Image (cartoon, rainbow, N blue to C red; front, side, top):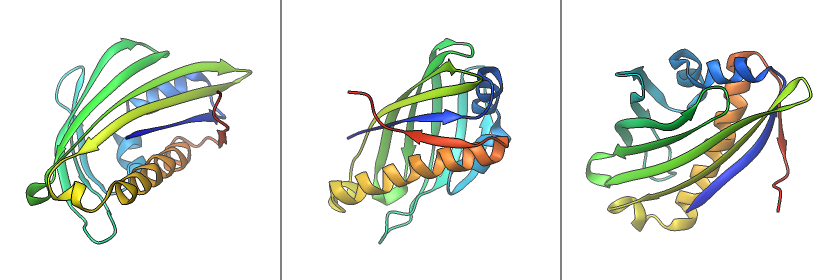
Length: 155
């Protein structure tokens, strides 16, 4: 499954970068986040409760940053374990650029799941994931005190 979005954030790029790397901002931004902490320079550990409609698993897992170019881009790869429901994995590329005095954040991600989660159906998982992504960027902007405007996808 593929997801993504383009967002205009009313803050300078360095401020957005710092917020993307702040566990306090991330915890406030990720729906259902119970815990997130840096365990090394490029690795985060997290515990996140996910609402999949009829099931509400708590995933624990690791997030790894790679291809990091400070204040410009990184790739975030994660795998979560949801107990008897199985596993979910995702990879996201985040790119920042200037758009006037604001920041353009472009987010592209792929993800999937195994086990009982897939039996709930791709549409349900896809809708839930996109809601999580949209909710993340709304909460992210609020947590960093900046306005956010979703932009249309470029083709």
